[in-house]
Length: 97
Figure 1: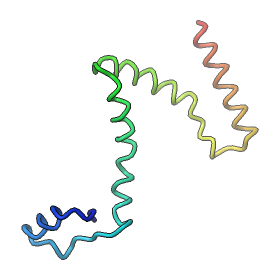
Figure 2 (figure 1 turned 120 degrees about the vertical axis):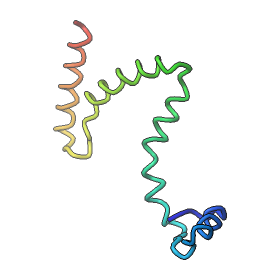
Figure 3 (figure 1 turned 30 degrees about the vertical axis):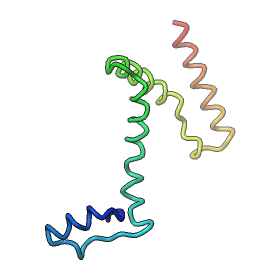
């Protein structure tokens, strides 16, 4: 599946696979959406001038995100608030040490 760029059709003709190309308005969504997490990381990386500072930030951010990412859609509101309060209490304990 490809989008409707003419260069894809020309390239597929050269290799003899032009009849196997599928193009359509929504056919390419699955392929494009698979790149979204990568694009998000790529945009965040543009803000850093040095790779070293990006690596430092990413290491800290990953641990903090894992601590607070409680997947809200899986829990009831009451359970989510209890989990978030426990995570925040643990975070405050870690920061005070």
